[in-house]
Image (cartoon, rainbow, N blue to C red; front, side, top):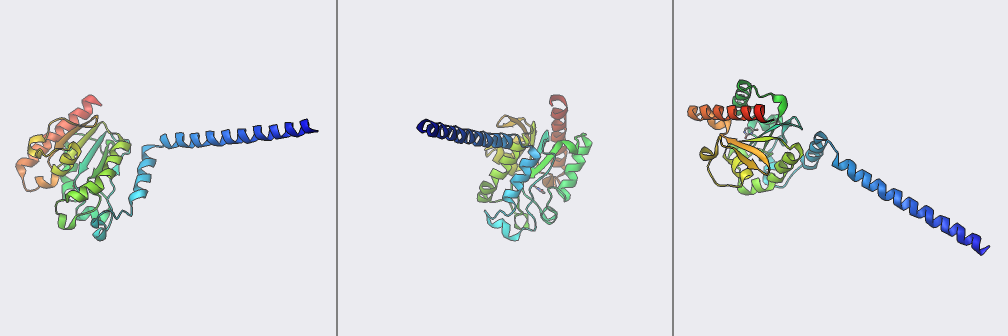
Length: 223
Ligand code: URA
């Protein structure tokens, strides 16, 4: 009788232990799934996590937070400064005058929009398009870095001084850095002028186009 009781207790322990192991395995499987999530899903999750961001005061006047847009597996990532008026109204990056110049350059050098993802350093528009404040950049930068990590592009093109200096962690000027191959982590980064700055500076526009040609060539010959 005692032996029988011991045996049923033993079976119960084995059963519980098996359940414990199955549960543990289940958790491991879940973690594996997380690792394997597609860039599209990871970007969506990132967007959901920040769509109501109130980490700096720019949220007060925004119409839309401009997360970014494009191919989640893009080879080329373009990084601008911050949304302007049109971008704030539409919730999309580079849909105004600067966007027109950018689109013109992409077309001229046969850089397919399907291979691109566009994002900004700041996700919300600074009032009257003023320059971003250092504390706004510091607060918003982790979102951009996460986007880069998820998309893992072969090439980054920073548009203008702010995106360039913040990703290269440098104070060097854009006129010095533009068109030269740099690195963000292990990703090639080529800085150029901000297309908005080219609107009133025809000589900058010419250099901006030269840089975009370099970008097109790197994309075609190296990736
Ligand atoms: N300027 C930027 O830097 N980003 C935009 O999205 C629009 C204008």
